[in-house]
Length: 206
Image (cartoon, rainbow, N blue to C red; front, side, top):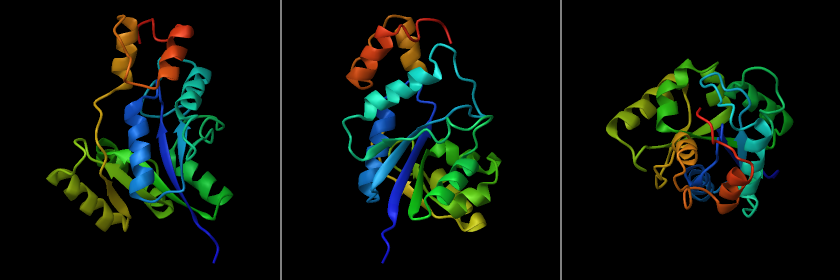
C-alpha cells in the first residue's frame, strides 16, 4: 500500500512569527499524527494589508529562523511564488496536484471558521483538506461547536477540533512593543527577536 503523507498547513502573514503560531502547529502535529507541518507565509492576503516595516524577505527569514530546530516543520514558499492575491483554494489545488500522495490538514483559528463561507470557493477547500480548528480558549464553546456542525452538514466537510493551549500573543502587539521599546523576550524565538533588532524592523508605526 502506498504511504500517504499527512501534511499540516499553517499559513499566515507571520509579521512576525511567534510562539502562539509555533505552539498551534506543534499541537496539530502531535494530536493528529501528522508527518510534517508546512509553515507557509502568505504573499498578499485579501483580508489585510501588510505593514511596510517588514519586507517579504524579512518575514521569510524570521520563519526560517523560528523553525530551524524542528525537524517536522517545513518552510513553504508556495504562496510567495504566486502573483496577485492569495487564496487558500488555489494553494490547495497547487499542492494536491503536485503531491497527490499527501493528505492535507489545514490549521485555522475559530475566527476563520466563522468567516470561511466568505472565502473563495469554500466547498472546494473542504474537498481538498481536513480542517483543524482551534478554539479561542483551547476548548470549544457552544457557538464554535454549532458552527462546526453547520459547516460539516452543509458542505460534507471534515472538521476536527484542535485542542491546543492558547498563548495570548499577537503580531500586532509585538510590533507595538518594539516601536514603544517594550520587551518582546519570551514571546517569540530568541533568534527571531535578535533578527528584529539587528535589522531595525518595526521601529516605525504600522
